[in-house]
Amino acid sequence: MRKSNTERVDAVIRQFMRINGIETPYNQYRLIEAWPEVMGPVVKQYTAGIFIKNQTLHVKITSPAIKQNLMMEHRALARKLNEHIGAQVIEDVHFY
Image (cartoon, rainbow, N blue to C red; front, side, top):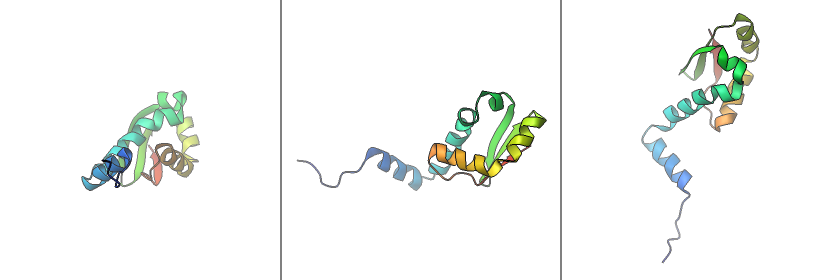
């Protein structure tokens, strides 16, 4: 006999993560891991550190020229990264 109240596995996992308070840290981890893929090999080469605090992604860039270019697009980069992982994790990107 089959139950009529079936749920998708991904929905159950997402609900479990939300209830146990691990959804946000997991999405933050996914976003940080996506940085090299989204930004490409050149930016990856000049990325020296990355972390999230207060819904802001903080990225240390070692090239002043690349840092300046990225600073002009910080809001668009936040949207692009959020879209890539499918969740609203950050609101802004700060380069130092």
